Length: 150
Image 1 (cartoon, rainbow, N blue to C red):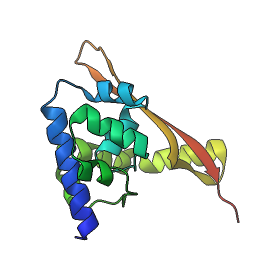
Image 2 (cartoon, rainbow, N blue to C red):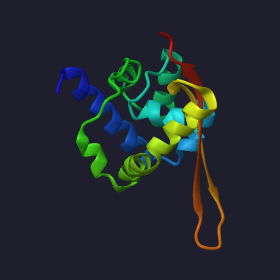
Image 3 (cartoon, helix red, strand yellow):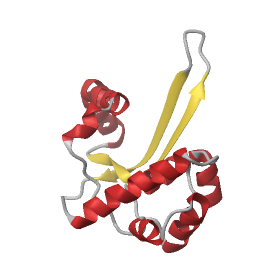
């Protein structure tokens, strides 16, 4: 593990501890930073670099030290090891893509042509829906279509 990865992991741990020890929810933080909920969570957990003013604001809201605030501003590596699959919630997304990924690919190609849905230029929303059989998790991914250019 590089020195940067170790510092970023320490910053992520510091953010998790700060959120858990505060009265603030992720939604509160997203509102205070004026950013979408899932983008805010991903950024504070290390998947996006925060612009300086947002990192400083997050630091103020969560009582983070200067080193952690600085780490939040550095461009991250967006890959994770296989240990991430061990988390049951995250594994279900792997499972979902294993089952429906080929069907989603075919449907996208049939509707849009040869290309992909951007994971960079996308919006993600999550909400709860009541259901008599138990509440449902609703996730909407709104991604830009990128046509293959040959």
